[in-house]
Image (cartoon, rainbow, N blue to C red):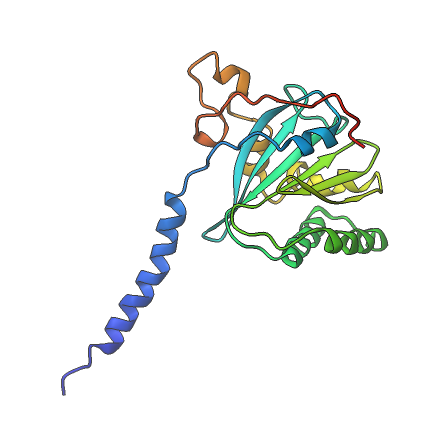
Length: 222
C-alpha cells in the first residue's frame, strides 16, 4: 500500500514554523535611541544627560526591548543620578513586567521578603501594559525616590531610597542574568558618543550613534 504523504508534509510545515521566527529575529537590528523626553530629563534634575550605551534584551527567539543608559558624565556610577530607558519591541502585560522583576531579584539573591513584597505591590500599581513601540523610563535619584515614566508621562514613584539600587541592579549589577546587555549599557568594548563623533570607531549596539544632547529647562523638577 502506498504511504501517505500527509505526515511528511505536516513535519515539513512544523520545521518551517520553527525556523522562520529565528530567521526573523536575527534579521532585526538595534536602532540608536532617540533623545529622552524632556519630562524625564527634568525629573532627573540635572542639566545634561548623555547616552552611555544601549543594547537589546531577547527572550528565546524574540526581541523584547531595547535598553539605553543615560548619565550626567562619561561613566555610570550608583552614586549619581541616571536614567534607564526601555523601548519595547512587542506587547507586554504590566503583570509580566512585575513577575520578571521578581524573578530577577530572586536571581540576584535578594531575600528580604517583606520589603520585596511591598515593592512588587507598588510596581503592580505603577507599571501599565505596554504596546510595541512604547517606552518606559526609570529615573534613579541616589538616596531618594525612584520615578517612572511611560511614553514621557509620569506614572508613579517609589519613595523608599533603597528601592532604586535594588531595582536597577537587575540590569547593572555584576551578577545580572544578562551580562552582555550590561556591558552594552555601560559602554564596554565600544566607543562613547563623544568619541564616535571624532573618530572612526564602533559605537555601542553596532549602529550609528547620534550625539545626544538633552538639556533641562530652568525649572523645578518637583
